[in-house]
Image (cartoon, rainbow, N blue to C red; front, top):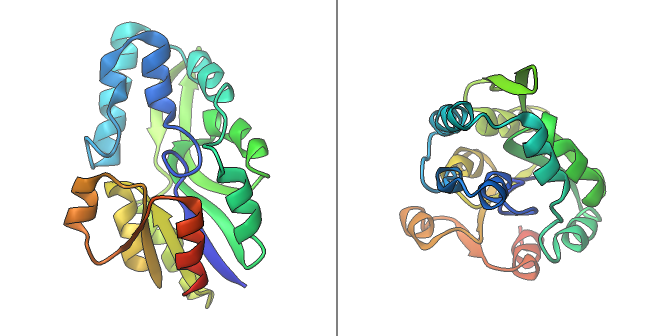
Length: 197
């Protein structure tokens, strides 16, 4: 069976940090990898905002737990798992993304960890350098055929490494910079593109 690597936020669930921005009114937290392509730089920016505003991990967890999958995401996953092993490869953190997995049928999640002290995020532990590309390389080294879908700059290494890469609901700027990838705007369209691979 082949493997499908999917990004999480923006592909299957809403952006967690944007939901935190909505809850708190902190406009700076609306930034995603669509705005700051380097994920580690983006997280350092977020940690600085959280420190200045004294935001706690418990608030982020509460916001994340209140999110629902994007409309159609769960049925899409259920459908594609007939032919693929679906693995979520995300630049999120287990400490607040794990509760969302039950709402998606418990797919495997490969992401990062946080160091938490007194309900404050002290440090982000990135799984490994170039994590999304590394996951696809590892699956390929096990002789799996790998497809990947994501919506932003930080997903491009995963798409580059996969046998098939698809941009899913990516902004026009990302699509224009990476025209070599098929683009899908709906789960039905994404499922059709994957079926042709």
